[in-house]
Length: 87
Image (cartoon, rainbow, N blue to C red; front, side, top):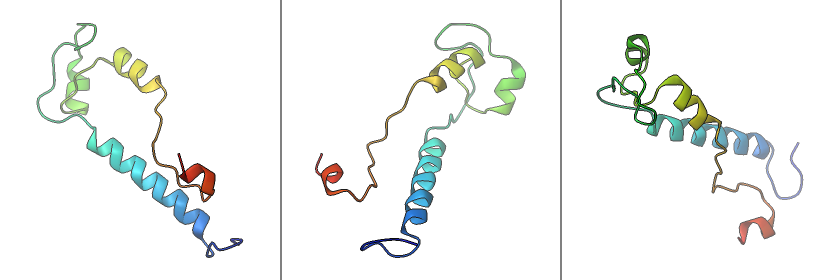
């Protein structure tokens, strides 16, 4: 049950939109094209199985894991608070 001016289901709609945006962002940044044989960051070999599993891969598993562990900040603020919308 939503309160105030929000219709019923508004919170779930925000959650669904946030998830959909995240999926769209990830799909847009997936590697495409020819896979590299060596990692662009460390120069190690990229195993054939990884190149077949992830077309267009540019990084080895260790470098990709390190990159994925970095915090990512979103510029989208879906909170209904007026103060949060003013920034």
